[in-house]
Length: 410
Image (cartoon, rainbow, N blue to C red; front, side):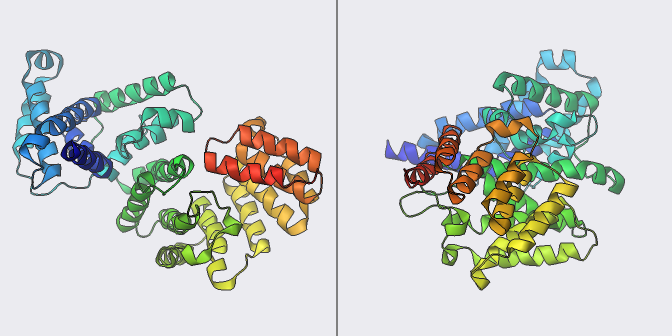
């Protein structure tokens, strides 16, 4: 039984680490992502059935890929498939499948660019990339985008069908097309990182989506070394990820950024992020990801200086609001106003936000609670803390807020 559990864990690790690579390889010949997903799922199921008896093969990725490709071969040979697909499409596939392949290429970036093609609805590009390239489940994507799971599932199915029907090739586009699709790719990488940040469970941190996002961001810098926003995104993920070890204490409790032990921060990742940010700044006017990376750089400077430059943070947050306004940035900017100019200034900035979504935005309520507590407005702070706790899905964060509520004067 223990051996079976180890096999299951090995398969789970393989899926986590290689899903996007395998799917991209399987879908590239015919652009049929749905069929490739089915074949990959079948191969994974067969691995779970066979490996406990046969043992884990020397090249488990290659084993999964071979079984999945054979599954696709059977599909393409079927009379039903031949009756519904152009003859040329079917006749071309066997030669592709029979090619020797000593290593599994990393074609995830091509797949991401396929998902960002102009023929794909802009509203579904990022969710599609998150699911097909990074393996995020549809339910998690739906939650992140505040959409009903059934609605998101329908959108993803339609988008995959569109890729197949339009015959969008799995190749790197020309420079002009790349510039058009690149923003959606960057959003997908950062979206994966943000989702993982939100879904990290209480206890030891996980390295699933965040590791994939970091890997893809760095691969993008190799592919596009002169794109400043690519460099900015990679810097942002490096600098943010550098603080991951300090976000939880030894018992799994949440630790706020300004309370984190900087000796637990990953200085190698900080150095890498800073180097990427310096390269990005060589290309002229900064964009959103460079500004956001610069914000994280200011926070990470505390490992050297012991303090945070509030004025620099304020200028950078306002710059982000100019180039890419969002509710999260507006709330973060209000928090910095409270740090520099006093809690009442921060509260005025919060009250000036007109986005109706703020009523259900947990960071806004936790920021308000903190500012009200600082302003010695305990009854109002208590109400804000309770609302923030109601909106919190992470038990460790809820416990942290509950401590703040208990510490209010009665």
